[in-house]
Amino acid sequence: MAADGTRTARGTARDRILDTALTLFYAHGVRAVGVDRIIEESGVAKATFYKHFPAKDKLALAYVEKIDDVCSGQLHGAAEAAGPDPAAQLVGVFDALTGMCHAEGFRGCAFVNAAAEAEPGSPVHALAVRHKRDVRAWMRRLAERAGAADPDQLARTLTLLMDGVLAGGALAPDPLAAQAAKTAARLLVQASVAAAAEAGAPTEAAPAVASEAGAEAAADAAARLVRTR
Amino acid sequence: MAADGTRTARGTARDRILDTALTLFYAHGVRAVGVDRIIEESGVAKATFYKHFPAKDKLALAYVEKIDDVCSGQLHGAAEAAGPDPAAQLVGVFDALTGMCHAEGFRGCAFVNAAAEAEPGSPVHALAVRHKRDVRAWMRRLAERAGAADPDQLARTLTLLMDGVLAGGALAPDPLAAQAAKTAARLLVQASVAAAAEAGAPTEAAPAVASEAGAEAAADAAARLVRTR
DNA sequence: AAAGTAACAGAATGTTCTGTCTACTTTCAA
DNA sequence: TTGAAAGTAGACAGAACATTCTGTTACTTT
Image 1 (cartoon, helix red, strand yellow):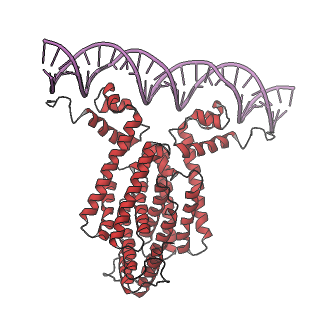
Image 2: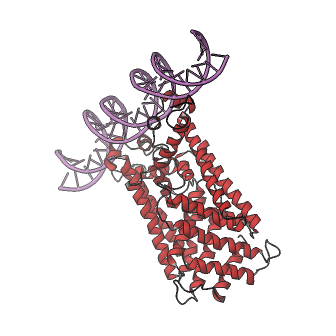
Image 3: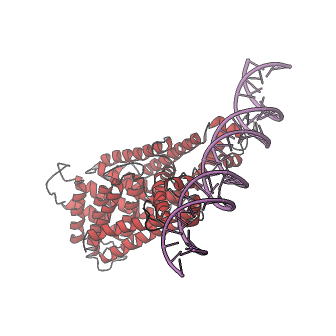
């Protein structure tokens, strides 16, 4: 075995450390897991550990970076799977949440959890902030392309729903939460798109009592909301 | 001073400990704050500390209990301030979130943060779960009294928004988040109530294309959603 | 006046954790 | 073949942390 030199059981020593940290940090929290345990469970020598990660903080940062990659990938994947229509993609994103919530050992949003343990100015916290900002910016672009009346507002609201599913999911393990969020998202997207479809001046128009098109679409969506699933 | 015997600067020794813990635990996390620091900052003797809280875990539990009281009080207060109409109360709850987000040192949902550091079976975690469940049950009752088409679904969706504001607020300090959530909540409540107002059979009716009343209300709300603020 | 209670001050203990250091082994490439 | 690179095993120092223990002060109740 280990025909490729520095690799043992699975992957590089660095990969094993990071994989182990991913599991343990997410399951128990960054502070609750000592380096000794990571070293033992990844089957690596202590010197090797500190060669790759000069301090525990660096490993924590690498952990959040990895989560960033994985999470963004899942969101983008779910959006693409919903087809080419941006409005459908905005709704499709919520399928990724369903997957996350049903994953074995789901324990809420890794960014929120990690940030809860990190000091507000720290690299880990900053990275978590950036991740959330990037997701919202991405959804804002989707909302623009979908022709939403106020892309900023829509993106904000949808990311609130997403955060709610992930964060709240750690406490109230409600399998219907993601479903409810998706249904609400569909309503919000349709209402925003429909309302924009007619109001010529999108910003600060008159009292603007929405006319037929918007009303019908919103009502249609509302009816769907009502019928739960 | 200290005319009442066992009290020193402010309140009982126990109160001072709990107050200090409230501040420090929320600001830095439960694990990050040592008992020594709490003892020092609350100006209490070590023996006194361990007399009131036999272990740090007990203090952590008391901390979450206190947060439970405070938070529930704020939510109920905001609902009452919105007047007697249950639908208005459901929306008014979101005013409490605005207050929380703008409070000095806001760092997200204390329950989510505490749960992130606690093991899933632990008392602290269980209490956080119960809190979220209670809030949702309370909102479900409000939704029932408001005549929502599906109170369960509506309560679920609204609590998702709330969790999103609180949890996400720790990362992306967005002052408009609570506002956006409230706007979306108003839309969702109106849509649900309006849709129920006409469908004789509330559950599994026909395709039920919503008629005037629901359409108008939903559209009105949609228009408001569109105009951001 | 005596006893009881609640608080104070701070030393001492044992565990846990991070990070360093020494010494030996394996692997690949020059 | 030799030597750099990467790894293994584990002892060790030093800090932090939770918890216990000893002894003192002050006020209240009997």
